[in-house]
Length: 198
Image (tube, rainbow, N blue to C red; front, side):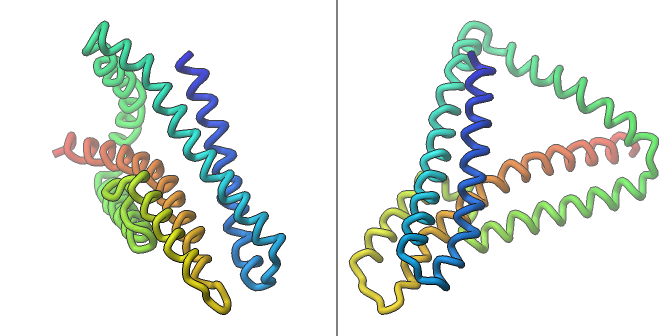
């Protein structure tokens, strides 16, 4: 059951990413061509991508139910299992890192930390840090902004394009958040390798 929900969540998220990328490609074309059918298509793709992302969150919540039931029966089994799985996976790389030059590992560690900080700052500059704002507050703010801009009439309507762009950058930050977690794991492995030598 848990595995099926995870697979369903991955399928939904892949559709959301495809819709998001399609919307990003169509948005500038729509702006320059000023085509109403293309605008409606872009908006529909954006809405479908947003609905897929929300469906992914709902599936993620439901997939957590078996996890909570397991925790209720055996509170420490999940934690100990995760530690054992991480040990099996990570120690293979720790052994390989032990054969590498210590200076090279320190350089790669510094590089990874800088890249992680840069990726996080770029996302924060574009639409704020998603882990500090939260996805639902950000979506609520976008809905309020969209409602406010709908009442204002502009000659060219370029301001209304801010709403899908902000939404797109929030979802881009959400995707980047998963990448940051992977980078954090690599940084932790490199730090462990460096500290185990000293």
